Every structure is written in structure tokens, then in C-alpha cells.
Length: 278
Image (cartoon, rainbow, N blue to C red; front, side, top):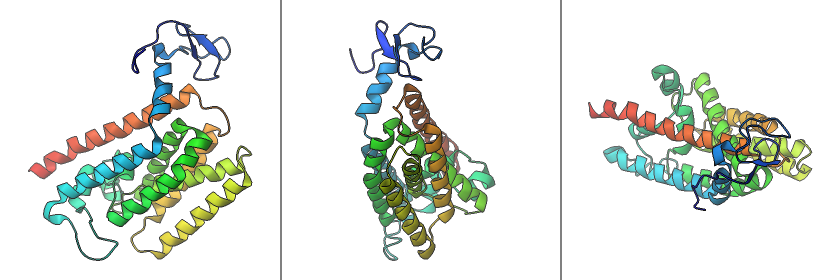
């Protein structure tokens, strides 16, 4: 069977309860879910979850987008001014690719940028530190929650972080740190829920406190996004019930998150490119 081939015979695992059901069954005999075979594409979703690593995808996609914003900056690219501004894309380039904040979200009505901003970064140091945190936390998250739930938490945390930041009036903001704080929030809940250990709870909470204090000290840090991301990750973890087996519904949710993010980028470029061609 090829990777993307639809399964039309045999048994599959119900996305809701994990019971074996016929691929053509109308409902699951155990939980009553309709269409448990997902039109035969359930096995493909599971293979996608297992084969595509969370950390390499996030690091790779963020790095590619950072390089593209540098290329689009042209003469606006900043090469001097200290470590916190070295290799900074221009605001125009970041705006083009989906910078979030009060101005894009409420000033212009580009609400979908709460999905795109997590993948953009403001300078070299910014992306290096954020990707180091993604690398350090991502593997543990996948182990604790599974890859699909990790994708959901990462996406939801970015949205809640940038939404709070926009409501608080931060004009423009980008970066993966809102989603990273969401991973920490999810780990805090995981440790408190009984599914994880007190060590996980204390370690995640300590990291979150240290990073939040660091954000208060350093200039230009969007602490509203950090706080919103942390709360979003905590609540998402509570809804996704860590410690239980990852189900097909989680894979569907992760696919929806990925699709929504890709559509947000496509629509952002559709809306913004004509403005810069005028």
C-alpha cells in the first residue's frame, strides 16, 4: 500500500475510542462515533503523525520563512545595531508575511495573522533562541502528549498569545515564544494532572518563571503574548487529557491546525502583495 492510498477493506482503529472497527462501518459499535473509518484515510493520518517530526518541521519552516523575510527586506535589512537587531527583517517584510498585533488584527482586520506570527522572527538572536527552546521542549512534548496533540497545543497557544497581545494594544509582534510558553503551560498542567510527575511540573514552572522574568527585564519582549500562550497551552492540555492514548480525533485536529495555518499564510500573501505592488 502506498503512503497516501485509501484503505477500502479490513479493519481500522476508531479515532474516538481506539476499538477495531470495519473500514466501511457506519458507526463504531463501542462508542457510537459515525464514520469511524474516516472514509478509509484513518491509517494515512496515523502514518503522517508518525513520519513527520514536530521539531524538524517547526525549525525548518521557521528558518525558511526567516530567510524569505530577509530576502524580501532588500535595503531595509538591518545588519548593525547590536545583537538584538542584527539581521533584522524590515517591518515591511514581516508585515507582508503575517506579522500580528493590534495594528494588523484590529487596525486592518487581518485577524488570521494570529496564526502566522508564530512562524516569523525579528532578528537572528530571536530565531536562534526560540528554535533552541523548540528543540529542547518539543521532544518531551511529543513523548508526553503525542505528535498530534503537540501540534494542536503549539497552534492554539500561538493564537491565544497573539490574540491577547493584540487586545492589550501591542502594535506589532512576531515570534514562536507565545507557542513555546504554551508548551510550558501544557507541561505544567501535565505535571499537575497526575499523568505526569511532580518533576515535570516543577521543571516546566521554573522555566516559565525564569523566561517570564527575563521578558520583563529585556526591552521589546511581548509579555502579553507569553502570558496568553501559557494560558492557552494549559487549557488546551486540560481539554486534550494528557496521559491517555492519542486518538484519531487528535490527528484530525492537528491536520486542521496545519491546514488553517497554511491557508492563513496563503490569504495573507493574497491580501498584502498587491499593497506593495502599487
